[in-house]
Length: 200
Image 1: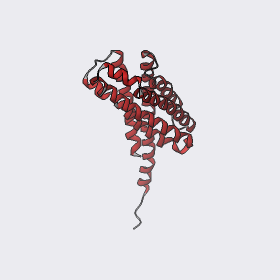
Image 2: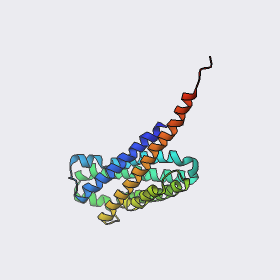
Image 3: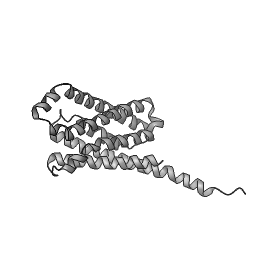
Image 4: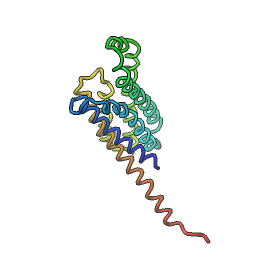
């Protein structure tokens, strides 16, 4: 399936962006218009990768896999929206306005998104491990890293950034599994086509 290759590549891009974002926040990379512009796309490419992973495990993940995928996807979509606001809206507002928003319904929406993402990550990870279709260590790294990575306002900065890097390793590993799943699905088909003989 071509979708495995596309979503596997999305996993690699997501991992790269997570590392770049962490390096920028830690001061190892400069704060530029470019590094800010690409920051929100870690969540978006992560959503694509999770979709490919779900398609790969859905045959054995059952209802738990579907629930985990829905929650994880909703959380990542919300995270993309939050990152977009943080990088492209809040910088143009006054500090008092931003503080007021975070103290009100906007802050509560951010918190709900974080909780949904954590619940989705944990549920989806359990389903992925139970399915046996993904490397256990890769899924575990994703889950362990995304817990602090989802709670940016509740975690010390070093813990938050370390979580993103750990999650990046897990996502890249699962992306590689999707890529090899593509190869496995293509090779038998090619073998069948080579065995076809004309009937007349």
